[in-house]
Image (cartoon, rainbow, N blue to C red; front, side, top):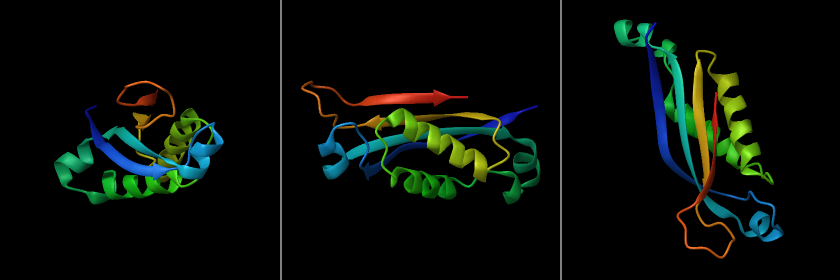
Length: 118
């Protein structure tokens, strides 16, 4: 069966995740990428809103998950995955990437990130 992947790419959210106390006090800028795979037929052939995944809701869920601090961005990725699966039972698989854009390490880099695929 055909499937569709709906994508939210480069969602930037300020949050308080990290091991260092300063990260949890001051916060940091994070970038999320979320790809969710689901069956395509009903949305493609019949234009049925109830058989798709609402990307505005995906963003709202991401913002809610990001508001709760975690020590590890791995935990953030797992919590986001679980929240999305709870809300959208059509999901067959996907990917969540959480990137910290300004990590507190002495290096010239774009970001540090974790990617969770299922």
